[in-house]
Image 1 (cartoon, rainbow, N blue to C red):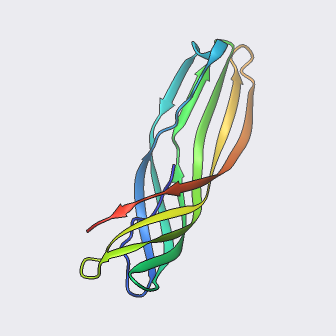
Image 2 (cartoon, rainbow, N blue to C red):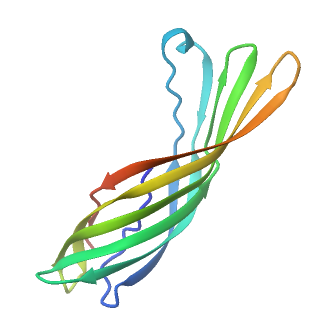
Length: 152
């Protein structure tokens, strides 16, 4: 999930944003696993971003952004013998941004971003027969690009 500050261009270049979003965890089961019982629970995500954008010339804008957010979106898969559950904890990203300032009066702009994003969560496996629970902390990183449009 890209989580980006849709902040306006500001003359001093520095911006900070508080954000609230919705996160949806999805489970894709295929083959022999396709018929298993599953739940997919959405959740709110709350975080903050800080960034810098500089107007260089001909209304071109370049900058960077760092963000972090927490969530507890979750999902489970039950095969009748065990239940595997995943709950998200943390989402973060580091991006380079570039774009065009459309209007100095309204600070409207179009920009794109490219960077890396990561997610961290907790996974548990519960054996239904014994009640034994195993916990694993999981994380993943990835490449992300997006093209937000910011018109005020």
